[in-house]
Length: 311
Image (cartoon, rainbow, N blue to C red; front, side):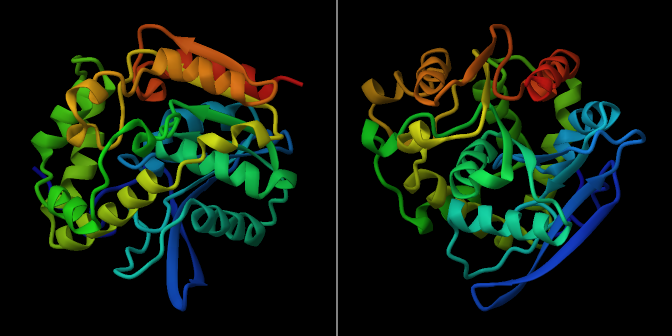
């Protein structure tokens, strides 16, 4: 199995990687990002926000579909993830990551964009739309996590040290087993394997401790910063994509059995979220799970293009 550096050194992205250097919390940091131009521009930009167990590279088929339709596509790696900086001391918040993303877009001269977020990136996309409504042309949420407040549902709090201890046990096999069970309802395809190697290679490399610590800090952010209560304030036209086989729920492993069995009910959570967001459109994929853009790129991309082309 491969071993990659703490910033995914050794793993090649499908498009050229650029770097945005900026100052945040009295530190000099870098965000890696993809900036892919279309052959026939339509004058619009789409920003793709990755999930916690994903990177900008995971969006490759979506990038191709959007650029073919005329969109300029920006796909950043957030601070703490993938090819971006992993500061040991950073107060992670969705507001901060949204501000970092907005600063990147401002530097690139992008005033308004379609914001697409998957998994944890869905929580971030919702925060971005709330924080920067004037900069959000449309909002697309793809199997976002955080459609329920796990702590309020009865999942016990866990310290960052405990999150870190859990992260330090991560391996290729544990990543694959988790994704097979939670994301894909027990199914597995060779197409998923590169993304397991991508993540597993960071944990197997010399930067294992820095990677695990960043993941522990961001797990704490995800668990303690719900955005679901603010869905009624989202002003941007919103489309919610939900693979109904998804059962993702943060901290489910610590929850009492009676709590755990009701968490991650995406059929119910998707309908509830769509009802809470004013005017939202819900698109369901009955046979897909957590990552419809990975499981069935052709179908997902066709639905995405419909959503972002709607008036």
